[in-house]
Length: 376
Image 1 (cartoon, one colour):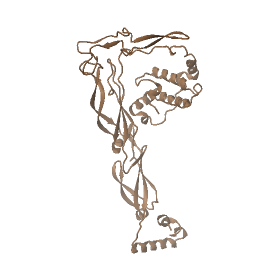
Image 2 (cartoon, one colour):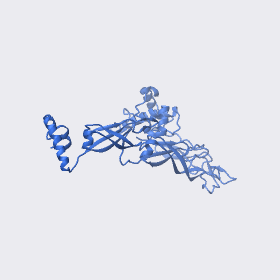
Image 3 (cartoon, one colour):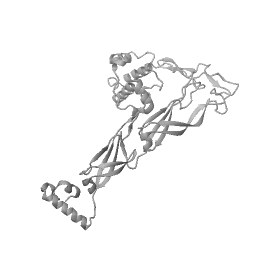
Image 4 (cartoon, one colour):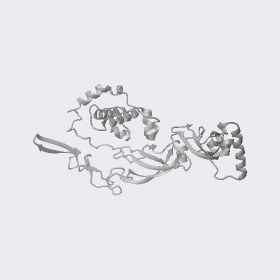
């Protein structure tokens, strides 16, 4: 699944009205009754899921912090009443031709403040740190406002001047003759990039860009219960914005190392232990490794091969609610001896005869506990 904001084509600070407009635009574009291309229906469902999450303030906050891992379940299609129903959707679609969205409209000029780019940082952490969380120091390269020109891009004592190519309009016009007549195309000025201004004397440290790349140390909080694929958002730690615009965000994508003995499935931890046939028959108390360290596990009398014993509340803490934890499942493997001493053989034959005397169901060569343990 792509990023929800990218699916709707909106920025991460988009308000509710912008989200709704973007959703309606994308939904009518990919609705299967209109778009017959392969994959359109699946794209329509993904767009619906993205809007369902981002239009809910609580779900959106959890998605911004943890990505899809923080949603705790699959999101469904949005309520069509929220967007005016399908009738409103089709009305918008069919009345859209020739309107303000038709070809020939001009692109917005980039004159004002511009938000900085978001950044991604991939971080690998140990298994136990993912279970219980940690505070981690990382170093990231990002763009910061130049401390010499204060973001203007010009040398001290100078400033931007009006672009001579577009006269400060930020756009250039070009006439094109076709068999259907003459058309005027409006495009962004290539000289000033649409700003309407250029830097005549650029600042040397930042080469006139107003920002420069630096390496910055950050301490981030990794909450308990994260897993591979969890995304953490660090607000305002992306690239600095231009012309006084806000900074972007830093997104930390986590990868969790495997544990040599423990396996994870959601909130459940699983592991295996080997016990002797005598421990399985008579019962015992053994030490097992858990995320909380080594603890005692009781092996009940008559434990069967491949039995699963449960250690409650010894699993993974729930992301966002570390008080709630899953369980630890222990698979019991029974280890049979490959060689026996004569004394051991005599004792086992004596015990097998005792069971045989109690009936065929206990016969050593048929079934029962000894049959399961030793075979024929």
